[in-house]
Every structure is written in C-alpha cells, then in structure tokens.
Image 1 (tube, chains in turn yellow, cyan):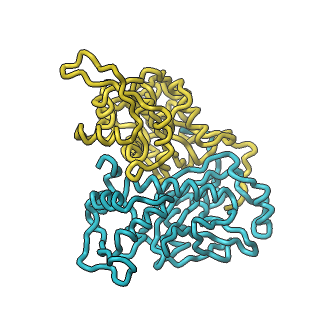
Image 2 (cartoon, each protein chain N blue to C red):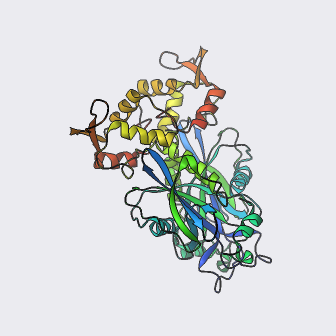
Image 3 (cartoon, each protein chain N blue to C red):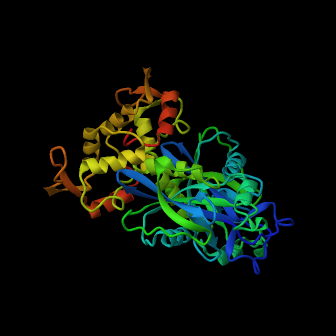
Length: 249
Length: 249
C-alpha cells in the first residue's frame, strides 16, 4: 500500500519504526538459560536486540545480532511474535534510567519489535556485550530479574512459542551433546514445557518420531541402571523439521 | 534502542515502514477459501491489507482491516510471519501496473509486512472491497491466480503456519456449523493439511483431545450409514487453545 513518500536521503541508516529483540536460549545443567545484557554503569538488564539497517532483511538483522552476541552462525532462529503496542513500556522511566547513555531526545517515536528466539549450544556460545552494555551473561529462566523495556513479557511469549514448537518440530539438536540419554532429552523437554512428563509416554512419543538412533553404548556411573545413549538421525530430524506437524504426522 | 529522531510532525498518519497483509480463510463446500481483492480497472488480485496508524497497535490494525473487509469482529487472528526482505517483489512492475491508481512517487521506500491469518465463518463474512479495489471475493486456495506483490508467497507461508497450528490448537470452531460429523471435521483438517488422513487415527486423536461432544442426532440422508453429529465443548476447546501443545498434552 502506498502513502506520502518520506525523504530518507539524510535519515538514519536504520529503519526508524522497527527493531528486533532476540531471546537466545541454551540448556545447561538441566536448566533453560537465556542470554541477557547489563547496561553500562547500571544494574539494568535487557535482552539482546537492536535496529535493522535500511538495506538489511529483518531475518538477516536477527542473524547479525545473534552472531554479534554469541559468535555463532547458522543457528535455528525463529520469529515468534511482533510486539506492536503503541506504548510497549514506560518510555519516560527508561529514558531516565539510561539518560547517561542515550540522549532522551534521540529515542524512537514508536518502535515495533520483531521477537526472535534462538536455541544455541551453551558450550559454543561466547556471550559478548554490545556498545550500550558491559556484561553479557546466561540467566536461568526461572531467576530472571525485572528487565528493561517489555523484555520480561517478550521472554514469556517466547517460552510459550517454544512450548508450541515442541508440538510441530523436534528440539534438541543444538541444545544437547551429540550423544544423550532419553532421560536427558526428557529433562530438556520438561524444562521447555515447564512441567513433568510421564517417562514412558515421553519415550513412546519421541521414539515414534523415528528421529532417534539408539547406540550400543550406555551412560556409565549413574546411580541407577545405566541408560542407553541415543543420537539424532540428522536426515530424519531435518524431515520432521519440514513437516510442520507432529500431532498429525 | 535509540537512534536519530525523525520529525513526524508533518508526516503521514501511518507508519512509513510497516504494513499488514491478512490471509482471511473460510471453509465452504469442503474447500479452503481465501479472500482476495481485485484492484480498480484491472484484473490484478491481492490479499487484503494496508497501513498501520501511528497511534494504533499492530494487532488492532489487523482487526480493523479484518472488520473492514468482512464486517466481522472478535475473530481468531494469528500473526504468522514478518515479511522483511529488502526487495519483496518487483516494485517497478507493480508501480507500472497500478500507476492509474497510485502516483509512482508515493510508494513506500521499503515496507516490512506483518502477516496475519484469520479463520472466519463463510456464511457470516460480507466481502467488501477497499478504496483501491472494486471486487472482494473468495477464491479456492487450490485455484489462486498470480497475485500482486509477494502475496502468493504470503499465502503459502500462511498455509504452512495453519498446518502447524493443527498440532498445537484445535481448529474448527469458527469454520464449521455448530453441529458436524467427524467426516466433515476430517475434511476440514485434510483441506488444511493438504493430505488425506486415516479416518480411525483421525477420530482417535480428535476424540482424545476431549473437546468433542457426541449428540444423540445423526446426519440423515447420506449414502452410507448415518454418522453421529458432534459439537465442540466450548470450555474444553478454550482450554486446549491455551495449552499451546497437543503432542505433549
């Protein structure tokens, strides 16, 4: 749809109405972790994110930000929601908190944010602050502080989207080591779903997907009977990713 | 995230970088239908959509457009994708095709589009053109012509999102009459999934959700044994909508 043309010739190199927020998740010590940034000279935390260049696709901007904050490429990134309310948070309060970093006159008039989540390998990610922040760290999703902007809500919505994703795509390839036991896989699913699952139903459902290969090895040294190790069958896993429906697959 | 402030004081009342496209679907005569608009003085069709007001939430704009095109309120509207490529389609070709309606100098520099789909009752919707168009009609999703902009792709992505939705939410409340048979419900699911389903597996899965109530009545006059009529248990249906996962429910 057309409208009055606005002259961008001497405007910012970034889109003026659209930003990104990235909920970057990993799985470590049986906990779901989210990557947060601490703003310079404050104890204020927020999600990684940022503006989109005028000559950059929105998905490309999300991949750029993920790379800048973690050093990782080719990560599964999922758009999950557009945060498009007119007033997404208390702008004046945020402007005041960050006035030592950002001229209060230089904020967006209104920014719509596209939310992405990414699932990354905790061992491979290298958390890296951005120009506004001085610390980038993993937080247990159960222990997230009050964040800047509407970022607590964005994480809530991302977690719901991730729960949903478990019904249409397998998850774990980026989050687990190459070899894992079914109880380890179940703990990942339970962390995402936020509830306990019946082990037999879980194993029946996961094995029914035909994406798991049982290895000859067992996990040694557990308190209980040593469970078998599994790995994902990459090809079948990729097929399920495309299928977009597990309930009716 | 901040940036150079742009002065919107004498700018358009609409956001200049963000638009909406709505894939409005209904189910009629066992076919999935999509609502399309024909542009004035042309044989060119596109999806309904449009700009977002500066003082309007993105979801509110989607509801407004749905209401303007169908007369319907309170419809299930689902954001499904942000179309954020820098060049989403052949702009010069479109400007030429529509030059009798829109000054080629008055197009967006770049517009990112938020895609929504809606599921509406075919009998209740009143298709209504917008100021740029002279016809608003239902098209069988199997027989969609080459559309303006990137709208064929947008419909493809919407249909994939809808297939996905069947794995995390029940569908049918807005699309089927109050009373329906399981074969009728299956034909809706098959139309959305784009594939045939085994009737016994389908019935087992749907009944396992606990959202269907079998009535005493049967559908008369069929060629085969009259099937029972069912209706959705609204309360249980709403609960499943919230659960966001059927595979692990």
